[in-house]
Length: 126
Image (tube, rainbow, N blue to C red):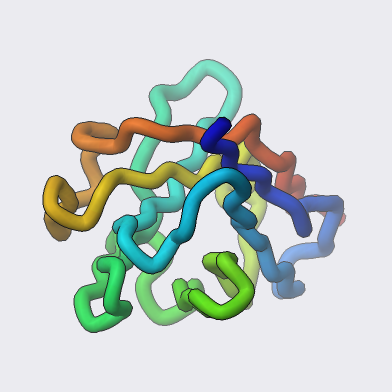
């Protein structure tokens, strides 16, 4: 069974940092492109960042550019999202998603991702 599990969320003060992890089970992430998305209450799910299977192609939403860094460790079957200089508007449930490399393209759209995790809550508040 293919499964993605996010972790690392929590409560952090403005200006703080968190590192989210997206761990895969049941399949090898080497052959999948990964996206990070977030959904705040009452808002649509939006793309935050994405990374190709090789890690050579990366994209960020303008709202997080310069503050967030996506990376992957295929040996650990895990993708990370390092979030620095967090703002209250970053508060949301964060999801990772995967799609086979052959179907991945550098876009922050929910399509074409096939597999989704359950999400981890990030709250930025003083």
